[in-house]
Length: 271
Image 1: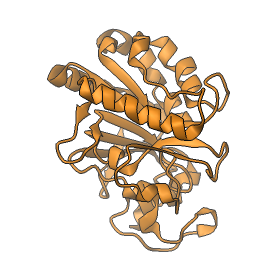
Image 2: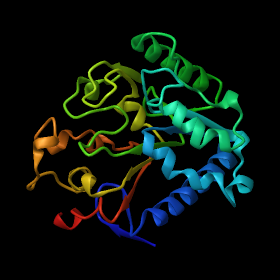
Image 3: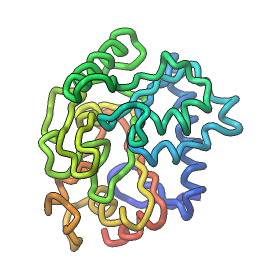
């Protein structure tokens, strides 16, 4: 059972990770059913390595039967610039732990080219997404020149980063690109490809998952109605909580849902 708190978006707090993953699977299943009924497909973008672990329950009952997997189109909100077979690859983890266990057509998985340098890979991925928009496999936002994914699923980092958008990084200021690359990630590997904030904020639904006590400060400043208060900023790039990447996630015509365990939410009472 989830508790709720006031803050930015729908904040759901669970007493255990098992409860969180159970509700997350049901949430995604419901969005999938709704999207397929309304548009004939479900477009989802995955990010981060732990996210795949959080959605494993979708590979079991009843979802293997109740979800229309043939209508899913899967994208990656960020990726490390490594070979797809590399242990650090988000694609590899997603394939091993999720995609290989559900009947999503391989042609419906839009992965990032690992055979070119990172800047070209980002350009190619943006072009590939544009083609999906043109062919109506991803909706187009009526408010922005961006794709409108049915769901972008993100994980919150201890430093407040989401996707591969890190505190204080110039990529946070990009206003027109859909996909960009970075070569100086503060966490290895340094070269990465990521959705930009305009794309994230154009989604129908954005869900951010945070688990563990090491996320408590980031959750407090990302979710709370106002920035400020006392925090140990030793692990942050910027002392201005207003520029935490996660705090900049604010869907314009969509919904934002936080899936938090009690440890990650432990400092929310300090609003």
